[in-house]
Length: 172
Image (cartoon, rainbow, N blue to C red; front, side, top):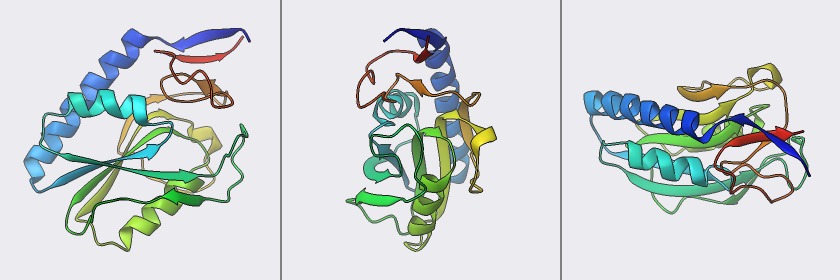
């Protein structure tokens, strides 16, 4: 398969550094415990870079929620496949997403986590497709707004492959 670079590795690294600084400053001003939660699988590369850029003390945990399976289009049917290992009660939760598309997955995860009484829930995403939104979600920190194209790389997959690309790509 042929593909083209959409967002370069250098642009991503610069933006992740900026996000880390903003997030660190905001949580330093608020105080309290911060739990950074990666939504697997796609967020793992972005999250690894992001947590290294966040200087505010934090813990890390993961969830797996899916509405895609092996498809390139969200089914809207969200399943929690792996839940958190830590309590979030009274903690600030920063959800890390690779991409926000229709918003179904993220909306359902946020509603579930609200029931667990966190101090706050905020969202950071590497990529945002606002034109595809079907469910209202607040994106507190965004790497890049992108058009309605299927993308992969930086943890996002094409049929479970090409996650390892150090940039965001599209089919040629």
